[in-house]
Length: 294
Image 1 (tube, rainbow, N blue to C red):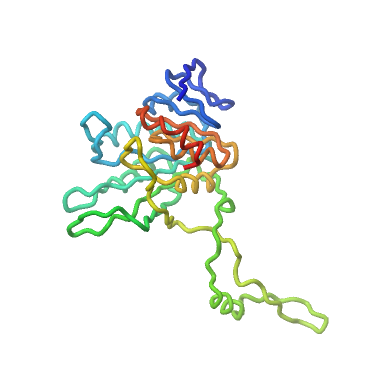
Image 2: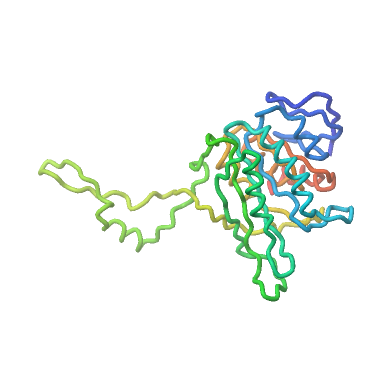
């Protein structure tokens, strides 16, 4: 994994940044550093999409024995999101994957508090998505069931956040019986002029391709995990939002990039990308991931 020393500042015209360790791969860069150092070097309104999954509350910090407690979110994380707001273009979006841990007999509330804190910073709470995992990991939960749900929150910088649902259409789920039923409904006819007078012409019961819903059914990441990263999401998750919220050639940033899943999705979809993580071990697998596409 080649690392280049850079001395030029990041600009809208190029993906270059004044940081000691930077890896240039494909359409993007992977920087080994604290994401606050990277974000503060970015120009105002230079990023089209930020998508990330920060450490969950109570999770052990990687290698130092500490844990990410509430103070980390009210301090460090909100400092990061303040910079995210600054660097987003007016049409830009911030997509946050987060799920509070259980604490004793109660589910943590931080996942909901984050929404209010980000709104206070100026973000618009555009939508909440549910990531449903058909095959959640097994475990013993006493009075709880398997945890098969995570949240993905979509924030816009302004009401003009861009939106491209036509780039992520899914096949319509009309079965044969439902299609025949719909063809008989009055509202599935349109008035037409016929030589003999007024008539009716049958129209299609429904389109073959439709907009997806806010329920995202995607399996967890089950591929080999050589770096032992504690929480990885599947490539399909960032790919969905990159398609939904950006155009080809635009810039996607992940400030808590881990093993570079966002980079893999962005590279496949022809977007520029900038990923940041403090752990070089996680980043070491990215060249192979980009080569194989997963």
